[in-house]
Image 1 (cartoon, helix red, strand yellow):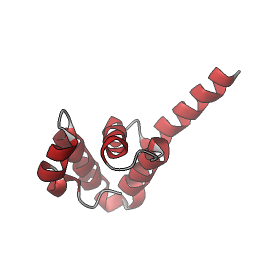
Image 2: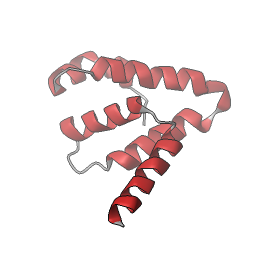
Image 3: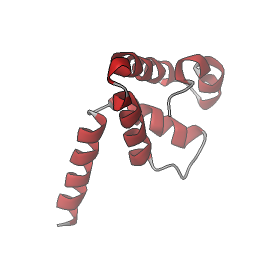
Image 4: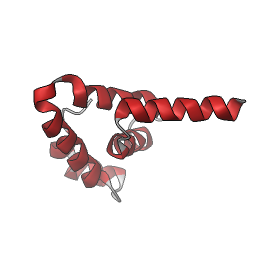
Length: 92
């Protein structure tokens, strides 16, 4: 029963965030590098809500999220700070 509840929770998070692996990657890296207590599910939901907040900016915001996620991929925390601040600045 608990597996079913966990699966349902995961599916609902994916639906709310638009299956955004980019948001998940950003939140996972934030947890690893900056805030070990970060709730990555809530973080991804927040990014998804931000992407969908203004219809006229959705494509731009999703592109920014993807650029940030691409920048942080395979980088150390120090490299993320020095190399990805421009790509990730302003993403909640």
